Length: 255
Ligand SMILES: Nc1ncnc2c1ncn2[C@@H]1O[C@H](COP(=O)(O)OP(=O)(O)OP(=O)(O)O)[C@@H](O)[C@H]1O
Ligand SMILES: [Mg+2]
Image 1 (tube, rainbow, N blue to C red):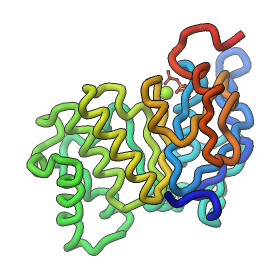
Image 2 (image 1 turned 90 degrees about the vertical axis):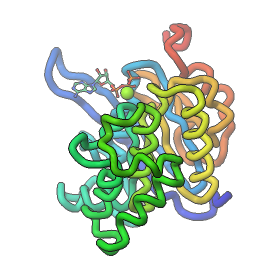
Image 3 (image 1 turned 30 degrees about the vertical axis):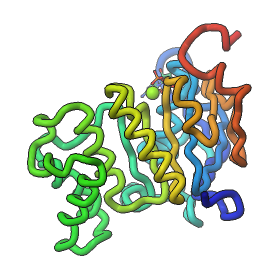
Image 4 (image 1 turned 90 degrees about the horizontal axis):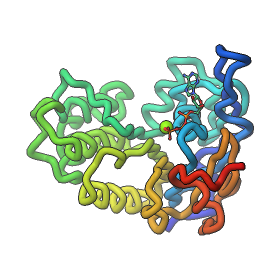
């Protein structure tokens, strides 16, 4: 596994996200820092409302931090304008959502080609073949020319993962990607993600599943918008102490 001696693929420093409105607003993230390195498969866990999705949305540039820095490959991501940020994200980060978010009017293959079209990463004539190759890798080659609505949930998520991999990004981020899937598809996806990390990508994944612990190289636990275990430098901590408190919503973890 590629690990540790290379600089992190992504560094987040002191991320704060405050939502205005209500009585004084909500501090969804409170000075969260993390580093992601090639070879890592990192879980983000914590109770509902602890800030997991907010953190993922900030590190992918989907949303802007109130303050803090995101550095990736020499780029100050937090300083990019909208267009440059979209280009950076398109090339550097693959994103997988719980509810797939495929475009309903495009075929599965066209959905997978979209990031290549947007970022011009592969020659136009090569894009469909690459999309079909990715769909084959995900085991759904025969679904390529259907609309997403004609696919099962598990097939749609595999199509969404193919789309996330379209530009071969170094970082893959997934927010509860198996939340709506059967156990067999879930296991396939966990194997795939672990394999991608082992091959040198960094994978950051929000999950509520305790049973996934053995898959991860590290676990970051959030509570009330702050890291309570496993953030920082990511040198392969097994993290046994932190993880048990972070999963689910059992009620005992938080005072
Ligand atoms: N757009 C928004 N406007 C106002 N508050 C928000 C917004 N998005 C999230 N929040 C608040 O920020 C906090 C963190 O939300 P977030 O979605 O990051 O939690 P989460 O850990 O992903 O939860 P879950 O496990 O339920 O998905 C919550 O208190 C939530 O209500
Ligand atoms: Mg969430």
